[in-house]
Amino acid sequence: MSCGEPHETDCSEVLDHLYEFLDSEMPDVDRTKFKQHFKECSPCLEKYGLEEAVKKLVKRCCGHDDVPTDLRAKVMGRIELIRSGQTVPEHDVTATPQES
Image 1 (cartoon, one colour):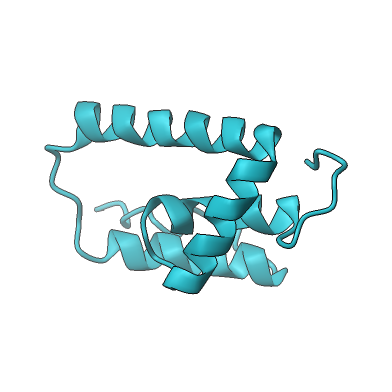
Image 2: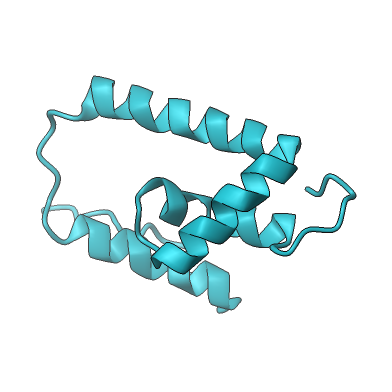
């Protein structure tokens, strides 16, 4: 997605790292660049608002469930595989083995 306008930070970079921005998991200098991008780019601002609303809804509806401690590491590992272009295992790496 791109609005067609030139920006210091490309729309694809902003959208690829949107959840890092939402979760405050990026350096302040990058957060500042993203904030500036949102001021200039209404399609990315709209996408940001939608994802922020979904995140709040999920937190409100599911925020009380206990999450297994290793689940985040497994999910983040799979995301990194996808981002790096490596082959992703066909089986669900987050699933627990079935008991016999």
